Image (cartoon, rainbow, N blue to C red; front, side):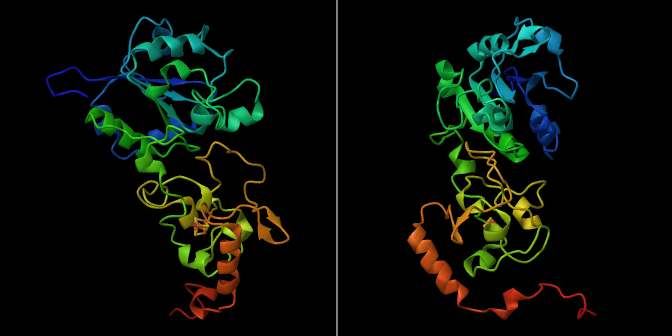
Length: 301
Ligand code: SF4
């Protein structure tokens, strides 16, 4: 986006109805100081920036990249100025508008609590009826609750390097959202042989059937691009609850809905009949190595 001789691109971060989780997640990006040094940072909540929110709210400045966190609420004011007015002003100059997190992408948690009022920038769940339709080809959705800091880092680096960012039908970068959270999960062998985890935080077992894991139907690269460069929810024994999808949040996050013991949702792209056949065969095997504790401290010297 800029050569060393040119001015740095102007980055602005605004907030709608939010818990601040995406800001905090982004502040955990290991390469944050280096990344931010390549921008002129107009405003980002929680850290010192060139302008205050009061100055930003006067709508006298322009930006190249606008990051928006939180659900859009037409009534919401910041510093006595309607957020919709600020958004519309800065969207005029922004070449990229990044919806940071699931609330800004699809409405998320705050749409669930006030569905008549709150929405994403471009989408209301999966319906493209949000307030930024007039600039829709500028909008990139980085869904997640909260946003994965590396996904935002990737997107900003692509912009800095003038790289084209291909997106899916929900405006999410395909490089980050074409695989499922299931891909790369260390519990895949347990999934294949239908050995269930009996609780959270255990090293053994798959979290799909008994703990509500949505990994096999959630577009996200959490098990490919690890959190804090170390782990992921499913690796640490917590089910994926599908936070990157427009349907998030579902009711009963940690429950797999079943009908006569058959899961209501099966892995994406696989027919229920195929899934049940495979699961039925897998369950007839007993694999001692996978049925016990991975580490038995009683027998470990
Ligand atoms: S825990 Fe979830 S993501 Fe991991 S293998 Fe089981 S279903 Fe897939």
